[in-house]
Length: 236
Image (cartoon, rainbow, N blue to C red; front, side, top):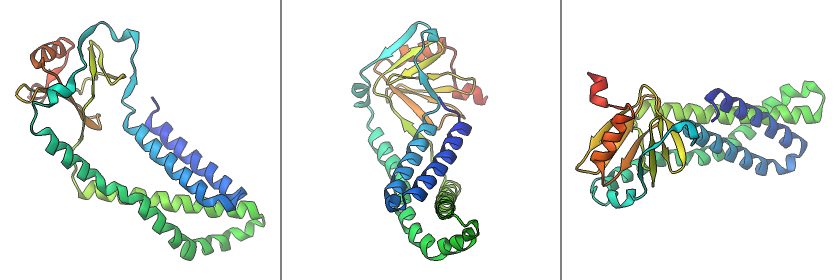
């Protein structure tokens, strides 16, 4: 999976590419902008799933397999409220596309004319338009990133829950809905037999992986066999 630095590089190159396309065919600017915004959202989603890899043969023998997580979830009366709260906490990010649409007229009226004035010295219509759109994309990306960082710092949001529909435990990692997560040293587990799940925590994990099963004791035993420790053991 791509590293974060490569993702940032791809984002920067895509910004240059879309600015060039908009400069060559300005009549299709809005369509190009929508494509750019969709690409940025896809890249952001990719960064969030970079901890996953493809299941490899070197993962070793299967220690535990669960395909009926939904059945186990029925015994957990608290999960619905947890997921509802999780959805509410992410709703704020839905305003980002609206903010972007509001920023475009602001750029047109106040920033764009100044950019055109300065870029006019280049004496090349396509190059002037390229600089114009490039500055606009940088302006939008900078403002949106600033808003995101401000929200992150001001609102302490708990890690999101990731609940796979099925999972397969190996000695070196675990396959979640077909995607492989390799265990690292910072990973630990928390068991909740009453609610029928075991959670995987890690400092580098962007979320909490929750594994539902009717055989909690067996899964716990197999995860310990794979070398995972209780989070309270790590804290001690």
